[in-house]
Length: 288
Image (cartoon, rainbow, N blue to C red; front, side, top):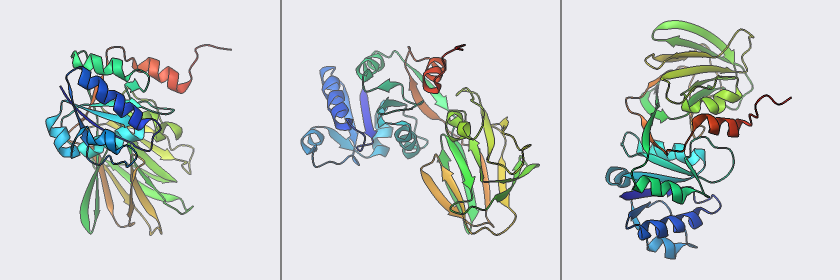
């Protein structure tokens, strides 16, 4: 098999893990191709001994793409490869994380299972957001798309239509539009529901709404969401996956829908979603 690899070089132990991956794959007669954006003077000898290529070519030519880092690294990796069909395996470094199948302690076991074809590919919904402001711009999110009041303290008044039917006008700090994958991220912190990752829905969660009756709502992934603003705001921001921030004008129109492609993620045989959820959420059963 041919493994691509990218990740966050600022994470502790990144290059230690990369070295161990390379040595293990060589011992198994497998090929490793490293993202050409990975650069480090301190580790130049290691990098010189690993095949390098652009992420687009890795996504087209390799069988699996390894993403070393936290959940944010996995999200940015998936956005970078876009609609290319290569499945991603996250190797997690750090604290809280929901997306990675392996940790820095057990990734060799995970790689062995992949080499032996003992894994599944799970498809995760991707959101497409288009912003019409002078010209049309398009972005993709795996977790969520957030519209908020930017760096001001004013409430943002936003009209939301779902498939051309009026839903509500929210006066709030903003609104989160979440995939099931992103339901355990910002949406959860704002009071949104936890949604099983493979259910095909979109969650709309207002952030600190100026009305107790404004509650999260779950809609079909086949729906088209349209957001418009009523009055001039000095600051409105659209943020994708908490990583891509786009300042917009109050006169723009924002549309959000399910993308026409999915994110492909590796699922290992001993991966249990509810067990991960219990661990990450700190659930301990009926402890009194």
